[in-house]
Image 1: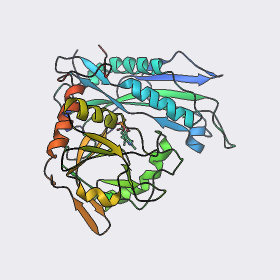
Image 2: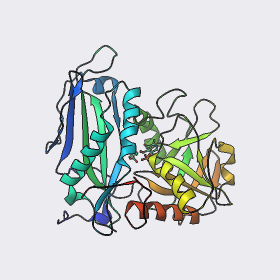
Image 3: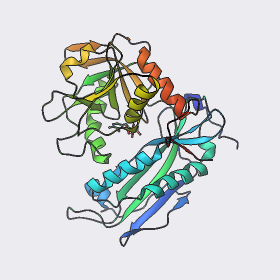
Image 4: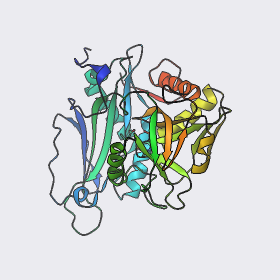
Amino acid sequence: MAKKDIDWGNLGFGYVKTDKRYVSNFKDGKWDEGKLSSDDMITMSECACVLQYAQTCFEGLKAYTTKDGKIVCFRPDLNAKRMADSCERMKMPVFPVERFVEAIKQTVKANAQWVPPFGSGATLYLRPFMFGSDAIIGVKPANEFQFRIFATPVGPYFKGGIKPLTLRVSDLDRAAPHGTGHIKAGLNYAMSLYNIVDAHEKGYDENIYLDSGSRTFIEETGGANIIFITKDNKVVTPKSNTILPSITRRSLMVVAKEYLGLEVEEREIRLDEIGEFAECGLCGTAAVISPVGKIVDHSKEICFPAGMESMGPVTKKLYDTLTGIQMGEIPAPEGWIEVIE
Ligand code: PLP
Ligand code: COI
């Protein structure tokens, strides 16, 4: 099938309207059968719960063209399960896991011409989301909901591709203890908008959030989890109840251990120990693995030995192995790759 005529290599991380999106509505206690639609517009009450009380959650995953021309998705079942957790915490009806995976497949298939070619540096980003759609004025959950998945071709999340990033340690918090940091609720991102604009204005690529209870431990950034590499090549990542359980990070820990024979550790990481690490990276669906060159903690600069020019050697191995699995060049663990067609 002919692909769209797009300069794939120069795509940034932006929205491009594609042909079809999946839509299912929840009413009278049940989901309808769902369908693909050409209509990218949503009409709803001015008093819709999502507009008044931000009752919404979302997911993010990608479709890839493999070397042999297949279209695949990476672990969509884990996105389905994480969305179910988000829905439960937000008092929204779960969209069943099997239906979620089936809806992803339908959406990708219907937009096959938009899945960037192998080796182009771009991928098809899928954004499943759900929101409370009926009019709610007293503070309570909606009765009616819409679940939707749109697709948009994307390039790298951070401008400059894989050039190491400069992060700053944030003075503002993102997630409260016992709050919603562990789910993918829109409200967590609303909380971070002031801070990301401020960071960019001051020349930083992203904010590193600390645990808001003690402001001692590293948590994550606004849109990705964090990994560190020790000087003896151990992969270390923060353990916290208030960060998003990244599917990329969970996959990377398996890749590090099973494919690269590295030691892995999930533990609390103190801000005052990060200067001891050899490499640092951000990981997520959008970020893939983006190397970090420098973390600025107010007047103190922590510069990782790998420098500001290229990825550190262990980060690079992790990146190559993970993307190799996603693009079908390296055999994947059982169940990680969902073939679309
Ligand atoms: N942390 C936050 C706050 C995110 O928004 C994301 C993106 O989804 C991640 C981490 C990475 O998660 P995943 O690897 O599942 O995309
Ligand atoms: C993703 O990686 O899918 C996300 O949702 C992160 C977002 C900041 C784009």
